[in-house]
Image (cartoon, rainbow, N blue to C red; front, side, top):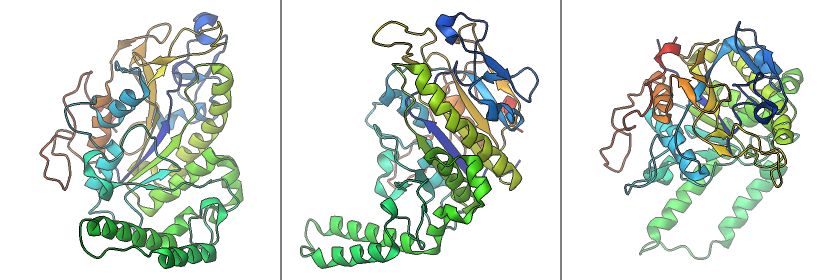
Length: 399
């Protein structure tokens, strides 16, 4: 089995509910399932929540993990754990798996874009690069993918700025640079700033920026992804892995549904369902799914029991003891379910999967030894991951 070339991470920031996504409990009481139902998928015996019909129609392309588990109920610590496999502390801030994979594949990657790209804003609340520093920083695109043109004349513009206006801004910046020490204590910092600016301009004005020009895609395909920022971000992600970028993150916020949970989930699920299902089928159709890992999830799930009382008014709070994640492509089988939760999706009753198990499986399918040395240019001798705290890597769904 050849290592995966690229990874698309679909990060549902805030923690999506396991019951309203991939682990519905139609036989539980309304206090747990909200009175909503599940629907069958095209894989016999596997059901999803009723708000995910498009993904239900292509369940043979992905697998579901229903027994993810850890003990961190805060956004910051849970995100850090799910992204690094570690808890905060110990004097080191470790890089996220996207940064590690990008650095490990940097030599084989020949593109002009950075090896890690985030659509459209970083997760925040923790450093993606950790102690690796700014040299390992991803390209964060900003902008609105559903704008009339996400790229204009090869430029990736904020809010539709034309290439001519971008050029004029660069020229004005140069004219205003009256303080520019050539030596002394600030010289190194200024030099690094200049290098970063030159690199940004080279990318923005080069052919690589055309990857972001979604108007090059058929109108019908753009409609299928969804003419919204979520759908068009997924399309941009496909174009980025087609270009060869090793790690692409689509950061989708808004899943922290403490209050009026069901209204939030229904709205978010509709756009995300269409976009992700189209992404998987598009990757498959272009022969990219076998070489591209796609994973979707957040830092934790939501409390199984609904808070109907004020101020929650039908809300769910943070919950890390049991939640779900989707994986596809790049060496993962489709049509499988890993683990099982109890009758209310409160605890795993079989095959607990820890963040170390999950991240380690992605590393392994990318051809990276999870116990090997963490790639870095600062001389630190540290393993990529600490030992597993769960049932081990997901070898049962390796292709």
